[in-house]
Length: 292
Image 1 (cartoon, rainbow, N blue to C red):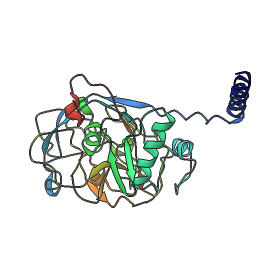
Image 2: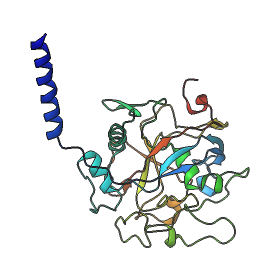
Image 3: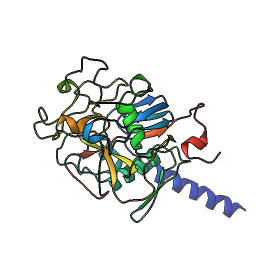
């Protein structure tokens, strides 16, 4: 018994020594999240040549959190220990990330934060664990709902006849996109520090311009019928990205504009922002795709 106690003491002492000598992971930089109150809105628009790909349909979105800014190089490097960006700077959005890169980042951030990862990855196959509360990409519906201002701008019973950039004031006096967006006329062919333009109605920055933002969804035609928490097509290979970049003209910064590409794409114009589920008493688990 004495030998057992001595051995246990030595083991505990060794563990304590190793723990003391192992440097703790550096603290993550702040990445504020904005609470987006859920609601029902008419996603898409009836605008001219866009109306086919942006077919208007009713979507119910549960409440969620969305990062105030695009993921910065400071945060990406702190989590992933590398910086793939072409344009370098801690306050710049990370660029040159593929869709799978963003999935790996979300899982890594979840583990650093003590949360269960949202995604299961098997080769190139990614499954979203809808029961998980870990960090994830926003769905295309969540992204558009937030970009249009959520309950402050997107909710209503009339379809958009003409979509504008994120943050554009409602009414007959549209705002100046130069005050809200980094895009072709003022982008100088490079990314810019986040939060250097005005935010939209929810306090979200750069939802239009700076870098494109990957979403979760596989591309497919919108459904014709109302749907809860639309999360993309059930088949396909291309992933959606939204919002436009520093190289795009104003039409591609429209909050309803859709574009898609192979998930392996990496480009200087490509970035992302992150989302988190939150409790929403008005939105049952079944509406989120979870088991009751």
